[in-house]
Image (cartoon, rainbow, N blue to C red; front, side):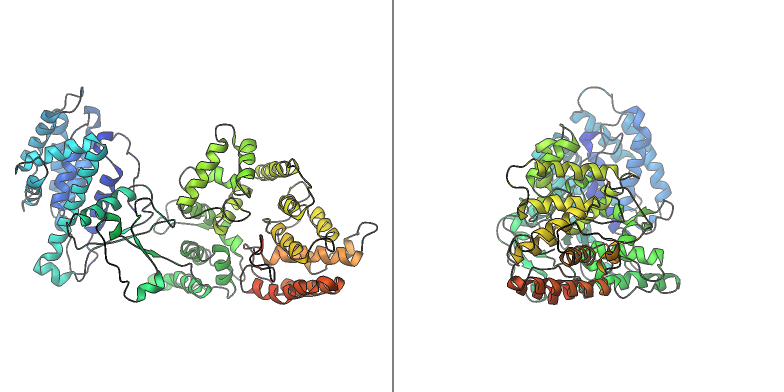
Length: 637
C-alpha cells in the first residue's frame, strides 16, 4: 500500500506525483529491518533524487511542511537511525535555506533550482558520505554532461514539466531505487544476511500510482536495465490496456515451468497469473487460520468456528479471499457463542488490525471501502438494485438526479468492467458478493429504510411502464422480485400459482429462482416497515406453521396455493447468502417440489429432478440450477 494517492495539502503540485509518493513509500517500507540480523537498507540515490524534485516550489508559509518533508526523505539513508536527531536538524536547516532562496513569485527556473541544490549540497553531508555518493550517481542523467549537480537540476526540471518529461524523470527515480537495492544485495556481508531477492508487493496496480509504476518497471527492463527485484502486483480485471502482450497463465499451471519468454515490448515482460476463487475447503482454512492467530500471539482461548459457518461464508463471498479473511476477523473479534449467520457478521463491528484507537465499524462498510472505488459507493448502492442498462438509467434519472444521468451509468459500468466486475445476466452489478454488500448498505442507509423503498418503487414504476404484456415470465419476474424486496409476497404467490400449468416447467422454475433472489433482511409489512420480533420469518411459512392462518382466494386450488406459498419462502430462505443453510427448510422444499410434480404429471420430470437436486445444492452452498436449463437465461442463483 502506497499511502497517499492525491496531492497532500500544502504540497506544490509541480513537485509531487503518485509515482514519486509510491517510490518514497516503498523505500520507507523496505528499509525496516525485517530480516533478522540485517540492518536497514540505504537509499542514497533515491534520496538525492527525491530531494532534488521536491526542493523547489515551497513558500515562506510552508516552512513547517517543507521541513517535515525534507526530514522524511533524509532518513532514507540513515542506517540504524543513528543520525536521526542530526537528520532532523539538517532538515530544518535545509528547509529554511531553501525557502529563503525562493522569491515566491514567477516561474521556477534553472537559477532557482540551482540555488536550492547549492544549499542542499552545502548543508547535507552525512557522516558516511552516503548522500553525496547518491547525488554523484546523477552524473549519468541525460543532459548532465557528467556533472552531478547538473543531473539533479535536469531531473527536477523534467519532473516539473509534466507529461512525457515527468515520466522519464520518474523512471530515473525508479532506477535509483533499484540501484540502491542492488548495491545492498550485492555486498558480500549483506549476501550472507539476506538470502534471495528483495520483493515489492503492489496492490490494485490498475489505479492510483500503480499504472505509472508498472509502466516504468516494464520499460526499464525492456531497455535492458537489469535489476534483482521481484514485483508482485495485484491487478483487478481480465484485461489492461498497458499489457497487450503479457502472457497469461492460470495459477495451477504455475506449479510447473511456465515456458514464459519475454519479448521485445515492455508489456511482454509481465506475466499475468489468474487467481481462482477459493474453494470451500480453502475458505475454511483461511477462516481457521485467522481465528487461530489470537492464540499464537497472546495466549487467548482459541475461537471456535461453528462448523457450518465457513461454508456459508464461502457461498456469500463467492470465494473472495478478502471476504473470507475479514469475516474470519469478525468471528475472532466478536467471539460469537453458538450459531451465527454471515449477515450478523457483516453488520458486526470490527476494528482494523493494530488500530484500537478508532471506533469499530461494520464489516460490510470495511469491505466496501476496499472493493468500491472511492466516492462511488452511494451511487453504486442504488444501481445495485438494477438489472440492466435500461433499468439502471431509469433508476439514475429517478433517484440520482440529472447531473448523474445516463453518462454516469455508463461511466460506472465501464469502471466496474475495468475492475473485473462486469454486469451479469439479470444484474447491473454482476459480482454477487459486491452486490450483496451494496444492497445491505442501501437497506441500512436510514432507520426507516425510506431510501430502500423509494428505489424499489422506482424500479416497479419502470417495469410497469414498459410496452407489452406485463404477465409474461420475462417481464413479471422483475416486478415480483422488487415486490418481494419490499416484503410483499402475495403477488408472487398468486403469479406462480396461476401460471403453474400455463408456462413450461423450465420457465416456471427459472421465474421462481429469479423472484426469490430478492434480498431479505428481516420482516416487513407490505409498506416495507419493520414488523414483529427480529428473526427470519420465512422458515415458519416454509415449514407450514402458518398454513392455518392463510386464507386462499376463492376459486383457487387451496392445496396448490399453500404448496406454492411454502415453496416460495423455502427457496427464498435456503438461497439467501446472509443466512446459514437450514436442513429443515431444505427438506420441506424437497417435499413440496415432489408434491408439485404429482399435481402436474405432464411436467413432472423437471420438478421431480429439482426436488432431488436443490436441497443438496442449497446445503452445499452451490447455486440452484434448473434441471436441464443450465444454459437458459436465469438458470441459476
